[in-house]
Length: 371
Ligand SMILES: NC(=O)c1ccc[n+]([C@@H]2O[C@H](COP(=O)([O-])OP(=O)(O)OC[C@H]3O[C@@H](n4cnc5c(N)ncnc54)[C@H](O)[C@@H]3O)[C@@H](O)[C@H]2O)c1
Image 1 (cartoon, rainbow, N blue to C red):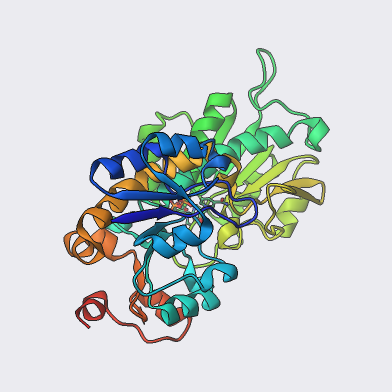
Image 2: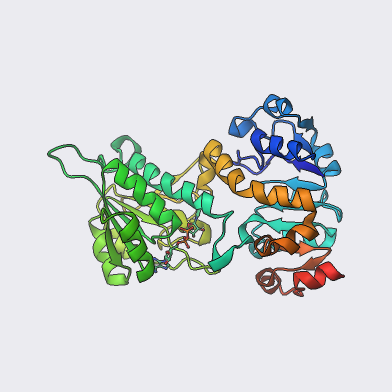
């Protein structure tokens, strides 16, 4: 199969959908790999690194025009809609339940659109979202530590303390993948860590894996208010699947925090869990409300593209190989997790939540494939 890798053109996006190592795996299986020129630059993979493993460097028109399977990181933007076609399989993050124009462009073009974020293995696991949550969680503790420094507007506090001086206090709301990863970096920095969770089973698990090194508390309004009041850094990491994040920290709680404390709202991509949050970017990541620094970058993994690209492609490559080796139809027949990734095919919406979101007809994948 001709597998293409398009260059990302969204602002602040430096990831690439395939590494030279991945390109070599595909070449070894007899596939042709077309990489748009400079696609890997932002992740420190120059064109020459792809050429060395036998990939062909091509132009924008060639990568979109000649590929049978096109790999991207972010969803196509309006300038790319005209390039979608019915004999193309597109594999990328799509998030189309929140994007009606893109959904219509996918439907109208007849493209087969497979979304990373809806590939789902047993027990609701999302293997192509998890690596980005790992990155964002680890980065959250790091960003919080940075903005606590006085020159960046923070309290001027070292999270780890020193012998004879108490460490800083980090409160993490939500102990899922983001929360766990934030906790291990926070512990590594030497901070005092509290996780507020709603699921008792999840807290039992965290107790086991973190060997009692964090305080685990039930998440409710009273507990959140008490913990946030004397925190130096609060990290918001909750998720209610398919819903906007609940506003767990109110404006009053923010006003009651220490001057120069920091909040990092990782859940901002779901609307945020602090009442005072609004999305920011890597080029302008923070703002201040009532003396509290807010870091609310909506695409945190984009800030560390080398790590994020490797983490993402480690997870996507097995699915890319399956589609390239078998073709999309046989690949989804063989793997129910990948089948859940198909959002649109042959002009039909095959992901129920997307059809509902835009009041379009839903066609089960088996029916769409049989047509
Ligand atoms: N900003 C970014 O760049 C970025 C990157 C990756 C993920 N995210 C976001 O981070 C958030 C967390 O993602 P995740 O992968 O860790 O999800 P997850 O499902 O692994 O974990 C979410 C946790 O929140 C808990 N929770 C739900 N309601 C709660 C409440 N009221 N109080 C306390 N805990 C509660 C759940 O029990 C669960 O353990 C999501 O909104 C995700 O979209 C953002």
